[in-house]
Image: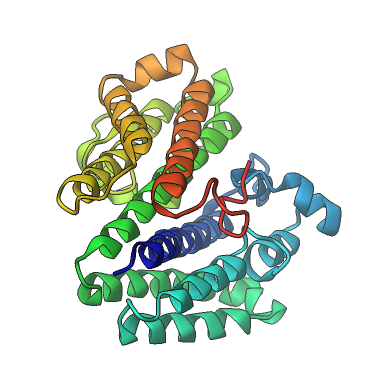
Length: 328
């Protein structure tokens, strides 16, 4: 494979994985929010969904108040919103088009069908009566893509860039979830241990598909520190930040050693340092020094790693604006 083609394909497959992961993550959060999230008056709360990707200003400019209908349209079907599900799936499909010589027929066909269906979702489909079914179908389509990719993508350099993109995106999304939810849900003194406190933190777990895993392995019930620690530092849960960063560090090491790719030293150094820092700290220490600051540092490290990968492997002096996180 020519080096210039490798750079083009490496970038596209890296971002293909990230956009599919992003669409699934947002669909899950919207589903959980619509089903469980309530404030102390029993009303649905949608502002944290917008805060997840720092979309408050973009949303307010075109939609006004964050009503359920407006937020759902913005997050699911708004093509002008680069963080919406329809935009993420469209970007994934465009990257797959570039990769057509490399990916399997099954991958291409499934993404085409998925993209066509998502593009045709209208306002009526977002009605409360069918919302869970709709978001469930989006999640299943993303998971189907992941399964088809695992079963049909040739295990060469491209497959490692795909997994590298997936784990960097997962780590980034989980840090955003913890950060936004932790500060939104910090209980008042009189609420600690009460039903509203426990149920809201259970929502955080469900938003990361971590509910059952947490209950299996963490003693002492659902607590803010327990949930934050599990999602940030657990070494074996596949959406925990520590697990994802560790996998990204390992995968980049394989690309540089087994496949002999030159470059990437800055990204490798950054991911190794981040992996080491996550493995050497407890959640109590994180909270004591400031959870928001720590998560912000993790997010900056992930952005820096993405920029370093773009310079080293994607043939670009910086991450292209057409393929960026579109997030603050």
